[in-house]
Amino acid sequence: MAKRQKYPSSHLNTKRQSTGLRPLIVFSILSVLILTFYIREGEAGPIHSVRSGIVTVSTPFKMVGSVVATPFNAVGNIFANLTASQETLSDLKDQNAQLTAQVAELSEAQQTAQRLESLLGLQSTYNLQSTAARIIGSSSDAWSQTVTIDKGTLDGLTLGMPVCNAYGVIGQITEVALNSSTVLLINDETSGVSAMVQSSRAQGVLRGQADGTLRLEYVPVDAQVASGDIVITSGIGGVFPKGLPLGTVSSVEKSDNDVYYTIVVRTQATTENNEEVLVITSLTEEQIATDEEVAAANSEDATQTPSDDDSENSSATDDEASDSGQDSEDSETQTDEE
Image 1 (cartoon, helix red, strand yellow):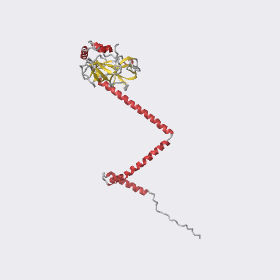
Image 2 (spheres, one colour):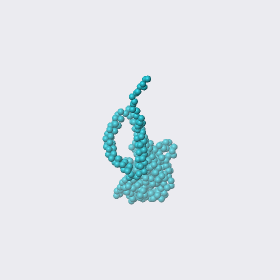
Image 3 (spheres, helix red, strand yellow):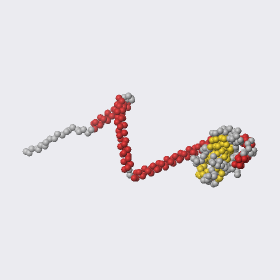
Image 4 (spheres, helix red, strand yellow):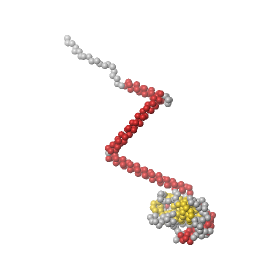
């Protein structure tokens, strides 16, 4: 009888091999328990204290690591930029150009909004019946001080309408076309505006000079005028609203035999940094000088006689210095009668 062949028996491990699942479960349970205790205990609990200690100890190492890693990060960024594709660099340049254009556009819109807000403030403060316009050009010669605005007869504008910006009066319309108008500025030597010193109510005529400055003429030497006084429109003549700012007295001079002051006025209503203006289309009764104010101005003119030199400068101003009330209104016209 044949014997059954025996094979060498091998030691078989019947124990279940560890898969690492049990430690993971234990660690998860411990983490949940620690988190629960951490949430429920107060700020002075043991787990909080341990955490605070660990943070305190590890902070210097973190700082040192950050300092050490900074130059390596910089070098890495440099190499990344050097190895960037030309297409990527081109896209970045395009994005930079677009962002620059957007910033410029937003800045311009903000400045425009601020100017318009200032105009609305002036319109509300003085209760002006007006329409807004934009300056689109200026005089190209040295003999006249004018600007051109983008509205004309189609917008209801007519000759003689006053024009102002956020700081006060800048001039008066002298030419009107369908879609544009020419504004003669108050610093033109042919311009004249009935004005007065706000504090003392001393009456005069604000005239432009050949050098572009302003002078308040025909103010008698017995009136109270000082440097820093504000000059405003008087409303005489019914062209400019009463009380609009014209400028500030920068100097006051008089000689022993002078009848009138020599008053230089500095205007703040320049057109250099202002693109939007208000054209005053009509006046209310409160914006026109009263009969008493006109009579007072005429009585002052009647007591003073202009010098021969002043008479030669402007026949319109000579008429204002006469006794008639109509002559006082003529002082409001923008161009001198020559």
